[in-house]
Image 1: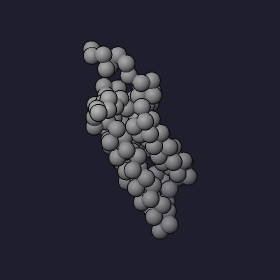
Image 2: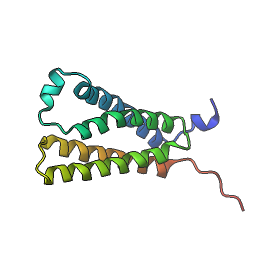
Image 3: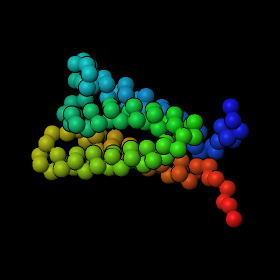
Image 4: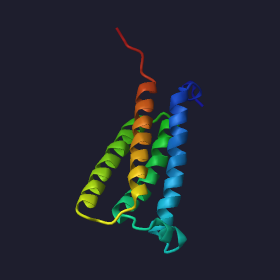
Length: 137
């Protein structure tokens, strides 16, 4: 391993760990609802399909972003920002769904807010702790 990988900022390691764990849980929970007609789907109640499908697919991006952060890949910070922004767009679409009288579960509001909070924090932590090249004069 390179010296750079041995000296990763702790915030990067923490953000990467949260991203991968959050991603794995998201893939499991989203997949349980979207892919299988079983107890998880029944327990989901009035779930909004586009939200659950977005979360399920985004779970793979979460794992990729977390892995990229841990490995200090240059694309990982922008991917984290894209995930946060995409989640904000989904909550906006979800809000329109609610305003138009669509069925939904109240817990979905909290889950989307949690996702925005987590991904904004991950993106900020990664960006602020990202190793910078030394300035040249």
